[in-house]
Length: 535
Image (cartoon, rainbow, N blue to C red):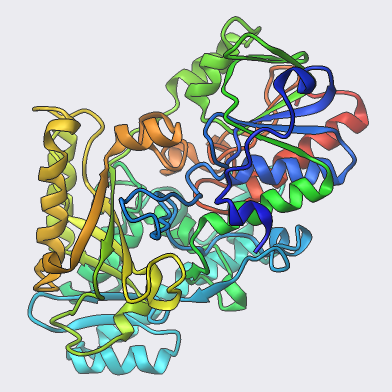
């Protein structure tokens, strides 16, 4: 374990702030999330003098590790939960495996229990998945439709990521270029730009159980229900990885997701970057540097911003931001329906649909009342009412006992739907009510779940905003429906001289990918070679 990981990212100050202020930096990175650290690592490897400033006491942003419970032997990934999109080129180029990155591919990759005691599982071994479909009594037509449904998303992935170019690296392709990569196939284009996940499921299968099991991948972090336009593209975004060479699957990181950020931070530090925590930035002065909250001015020719666009606007303050670009950032949509439930358990849950089995602890588990129920939950959320109608459960300690005391376990739920602003009451007054919604939802499939709870926390959108610094609590720094993806996503280059974005609001999108930071570093380095920092 590297030194940064051993400290869970609490690296402190490398030198007094006054000393940092005496240096002329080539670049200051505002925000020590995984993308900011990635940008810093690549810039430092290129020989730049780089300073990373993180306002919190630990590195990692939403991809970090914390100790939120009274028993500090539990280390929790508060927001990021499983790995699947971290790009292999970053893993290789920053030598992350040597720095402690290790993962276990979840198997089954998805497991969905039903209230009647049956379940659906996506195993890495397709023959086991097919056997499960047979056991459920799924018709031959619907089983074939299921495999065709999975195949079309994989075909799109291959064409966009492994064809003439990798569309996630470098500049985003235009819609016309995407159409060319997809060979003009209308069904694929509809999935990328238009369709709801419900529509796509309807076109491939009629069995409602399969639809109820599969819709969740189309609503992760989406401010919308499964029947809303563009949600098919949410599944597509999450289906663009190639984890451990096994394709678009998900896995658990040994030690927790924060270990990714800490490994990247180690690469940045080894390359010569300076990492500083507990240093909040008050103002960005493009082309000049930044001003800290204590009034100290730090000099840098370029500022690379890992903060979201709303925070960036506030930090840019009186800077010369072209009116059109300022309006674009002001209009950037950051609504989030996500609420997290993180829990310490005395033992693993027992599931009605898998009595006496341990393998559900190796899965990612979706619990839901079904597609229609989730749509109703979103509509309630849009009215200002929390309604947890979908939860994706992760049991970190199924594979990896290290973040918990011996014999105890960690459970995290990525839940929807709950709004930032409640129509009645406040998050402080209703947090326990939302927690009860999680407990009741899980207990429908795992009786006795509540008896295993030792401690838990509920993080609504305002809590994520306050703790992590993500405006609106949006873990992707902005909605990832088609109107804010591809050529509509932000680019690293901006019309503000000396100012770059590197966070999840940039192409290719949200999640723990790290290409955003790599793309930003490449843009800044290319601009420096030609003597400009403006696109």
